[in-house]
Image: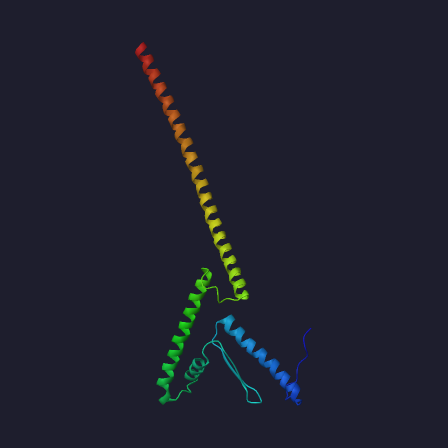
Length: 190
């Protein structure tokens, strides 16, 4: 059952206001994370509480995202632009290095190496991924073997038909030769 429509106005009770802020902040951070994962979007979120405490989420380096935003909107100042562009590229390189390192570590995990740093949850997830991967490989292997067996059966039938056809030709040739030799024999006998 859905909730009723909430009237948007300032909550007067400070305790209720703080509780609402915490719940909605967590929901907003969760949504930002989900958006970044599901859509592969570059997301940066800054929240300042009424008490001036800062909360942030960033799917990539937040400084790079802010610099990218500034350059998209045109906020970057001209004297700062060269430094800002260089910083963006440096952050991009660092981000790519981290991504490469993470992918190499993941490959090693799939190979059964460097498992010491993984917790139980990570190991179970790795095991599940490997199980799914093995099942996909087996399925592909079964499909290829089945296709090859069907091909060999068709080839066998074709060769069997060709063999039968050739045997019939041989018998016909033998009959013709025997008929020809008996005719020649009869002609010579008369």
